Each structure stands twice: as structure tokens, then as C-alpha cells.
Image (cartoon, rainbow over all chains, first blue to last red; front, side, top):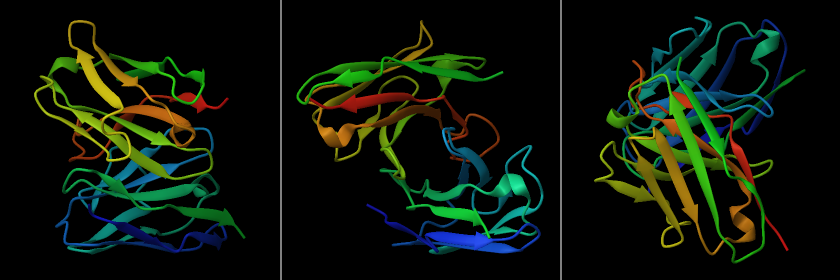
Length: 107
Length: 121
């Protein structure tokens, strides 16, 4: 199975900050990497698919990059509604696996 | 509008069984793959099972293999998860999710609201 490791596990930031979350795969997954945002009590929502493609309706302050084993999710200017937990997930092979999550909190 | 509505969760004793359902609408259910993903309280996301559009290909996470069975009824636009020999560690919110339904690669692009399964005596 492909292991996905996110860092950091938690992050405190302020509105307007630029934030980067990283995700590393235990083997190459090409660009088969997706990012999700989850708010308490809600289902996850896809933000970025195929490493760098912005899901329809997602604000352009979200961006993704990387290929192979190393990926990043960047939020260019944090907004109040962005405080949530973020997960990466590989869709290269089955079983699909998720990172452990990054909790983004208000500083 | 794509809608996925899970049902069937509840409290069950260890060793017991439960059948989850996911009613789909707003898209051509019979032509798309479906998945179950779960989330234990306060924990991260765990993929559970996958079923192809025709049910010809099925996968399970090792943690549920031999105990859970995924199925679908395309005539009823419904997805199911039969859960047997339940354990405390199966306690979670269970989501059904599409994969790659829209222009979103192979991501889980639509999710239901989830149904809570609690395994406890």
C-alpha cells in the first residue's frame, strides 16, 4: 500500500497569511494526488485534483503543485472560512490512501 | 444536482451486523464507480471499499476484508455496505462517495452527509 505523509499535522496562522501544506507519498504516484478540505461535522470537499487542477467553484487562492512523491497545497491569502482540516489522497492505486490530515487553526 | 444520501447507521453490539444504504440521484448512477469511506471519531479519513459500475470489480481495505460486502442496485440507484462481525474499531461515520464523476480526475468528488455507526456493548 502507498503511505501518504502530511506535514505539519497542525498549523496556526492568521487571516491573510500564505500557508503551505506538504504531502509525501511512499512511492511515485505521478500526478494522482488530490487535496480535500473538511470542516467539523461536514463531508470532505475536493479542492485540487490531479496534483494541480483546481476543482470547479474553488477559490483561486488555493493551488497545488508537485509530482512523483512530493506535493504541496498552498493557500495564498488565508480567509476566515479556510480554517479547517486538509487531507491529501492518492488515486494512483488501490487501496486509495489518505494523509493523516493537517489541522489549520486561527492564530 | 448530484445527491448522495446515506442511511442505516446506528448502535450495534460487537459481533453484530448492519447494512448501510446510499441513495443516489442527479447523475447516471449505473455508469459510475462508487466508494465507501469512513472516519472514526476525531480521526482521519479511511477508504473502505470500491465497486465498479457493473459490479464486476470490487476492492476492500484489508481492515474490512472478509467482513464487509459492497454491492449496488443500478435499477434502484442505490449502493450498499453489508457489515458483519463488527468491532469497536469499526465505529465511524461512513460516507458514500463518487470517484471522478465530474471533471475532477480520480478524486472523490461527491460525498453524502455520512451515517454514524457505533459498535459498543
